[in-house]
Amino acid sequence: MAVSQLNNLAAAGCHKLDCEVDELRVAATAAGFALFEADLKGIKGKKNLLNTLAVATRYPDEFGENWDALVDVLCDLSWAAAPGYVLLLRQVSPTLGLSAHDREIAQDIFDDTVVYWRQRNKPFWIFLV
Image 1 (cartoon, rainbow, N blue to C red):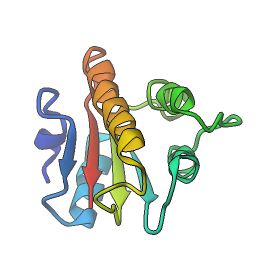
Image 2 (cartoon, rainbow, N blue to C red):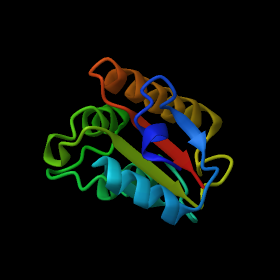
Image 3 (cartoon, rainbow, N blue to C red):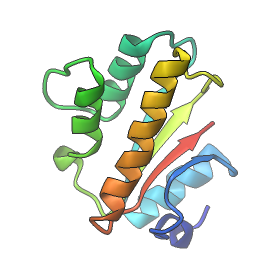
Image 4 (spheres, rainbow, N blue to C red):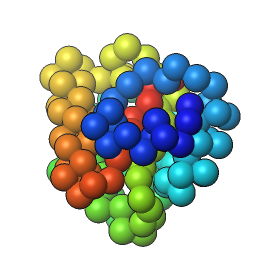
C-alpha cells in the first residue's frame, strides 16, 4: 500500500485489504492519516459491534450504542483530526456477527461515511481483513 493510494479520494471506500497490515500501517502513518483498528473476532450482535467500533475510534464521550451514535462517531472524529482516515476491521466474519438487517444498516453507514468524508476532501478507508 502506497501513500499515493491512500490519498486517492475517488478510490476510498470499503475494501478487502490486499496487502500486509504492517504495510497499511506504514502508509497510513506516512500519509498522516488516523488509523483505527477493531478486532471483530467473535463479535456477535449490534451492541457488541458498536461498542468495539467506539473503543477502536477512541470515542471520547459516552457512546449511545445505537446506529445514530455510530454515524455521529464516524462523521465527527474531531478528537483525531487528520487529512484522512483508515478503519481497519480485523478478523471480520462474512456476517460481521450481525443479522442480515443489521449488516445492511452497518454497510450503509460505512458507505455513507466514505461519502461524507469525500465531500470534505478527506479519504476515509475501511479495510476488512
